[in-house]
Length: 261
Image (cartoon, rainbow, N blue to C red; front, top):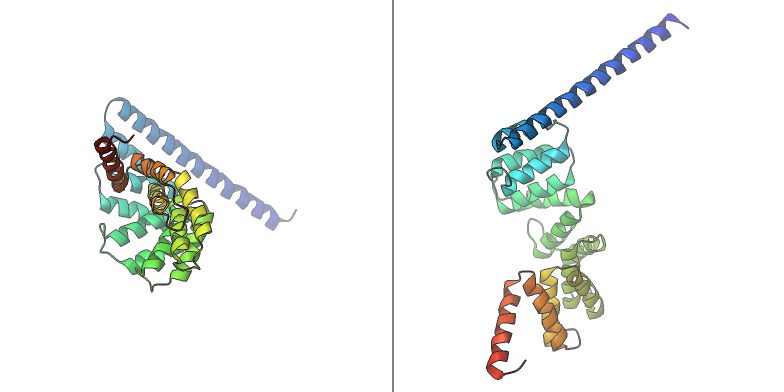
């Protein structure tokens, strides 16, 4: 074996040995910080535990960066802080983590910590949508339908909504049903509209349950069926839809007044 090859093999061995030690140190540090966090929690020191956990987040750990952003955004276990949430989301977004990209899009759309920027929000949603995020696909569809942050384009909006619906997003399925019923961005088709709206309703989407119930009560695009309509209205009410809660209350009052059960 030549001297050059021997030197190359030696250098390679040294490189991998250094990398192995680096990984061992990182793992040891992570374990120590997590142990310290658990100890703090057991002693009722929540803030101290959070500080240890924050130290444990590696610069390349996009999932944990997003999770910390979500905690700060929602104020779970920590005081709600949009600035901190934004910083964590942005760190994860820079590494291509789609959930963080969507979260940033929401913050730009709502003007939380940053100035409202619908154009940039659309760009962020579209980036995540093209990477397969179904929530972002629905958001892109909605913005194209409304012309928010982008020129209005119902046909393209329908295609994005359909993609999200096919990928399993219940809200997109309900939205797709309404678009087909109304012929919004696509040729009107009540049969397909009913299919998608019922699919979303059965999955527990309150808005789809409300919309389906109303259509059945009024015979709008479907055969009128009062009993089934109120069943869906009641499901939507149980899922927190305020309009449907009021409808159920009004119906009960009317039944009590007329003696109808």
